[in-house]
Image 1 (cartoon, one colour):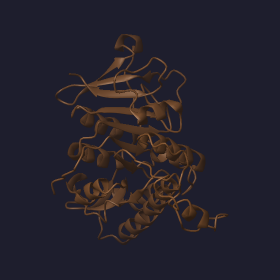
Image 2 (cartoon, rainbow, N blue to C red):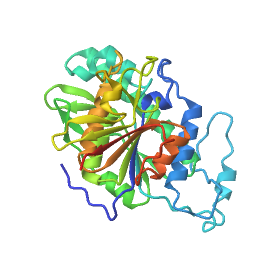
Image 3 (cartoon, rainbow, N blue to C red):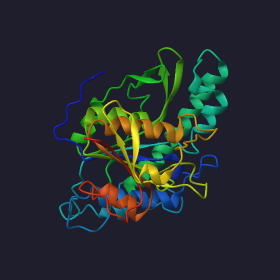
Length: 329
């Protein structure tokens, strides 16, 4: 694995959960409202205090009902006036209703590239997830965020029995140092033992955190955080703080275990080929063990904006809804 050398440390790695930015029960359908709000929140969080309030879009390709790009280009007439200094972020997104169907129906996550169905599914999965990646990059670009799509497969990521075996992070580092916001995603990759598998966005986040050491990590999901049981259960309780100890084991701090009075139950949706919330908590715990606070919070809310801005680093307000996972020093 190539060493990563950054000129400066990065501020935040953000995971855009697939269920938060897509309509997970509708094949390849983006949740446009959520994605637009999340993109706006990211711009506000990344903005280092430029006096300009005008958003200068960077998507100059044709979209439905938007064919004239000359107005965006005119905004660059006085380049100094609209120069926005963004802090250093990395964005990773899940697949949601893109890719999961293709992967689960063909068994890509189980390996076996010698099987025609798996090979076809590998191709179909990558077509789907890279399509979503492009749309997310475009949404960020419309907010004036200089985003660059970076697919793990194309950037040399591979696995061995689903664990990261190689990952060339030099491209990510160069993009960050050049003032861009890398946008990675869960992807179908080659596996040394299985032939192929699915590399989840949560695993990518953990690997990036190990090498880039951000100040904090934010997981944007479709629910308010981690619950003691499926959030659809009327008795579900939001776990506000989870502590991780030296050996990687985690325990609930708030609310107190006595007040829960029951075992924590975490479920995985049958169609999810990446482990769902189980993987998310496991990877978040490993990130927290590095001394990096992790916030799991509902996307497109005031609570997620506060987390993205880093407002929670010096204390969690009582009115904040979400889950913080941190190392128990």
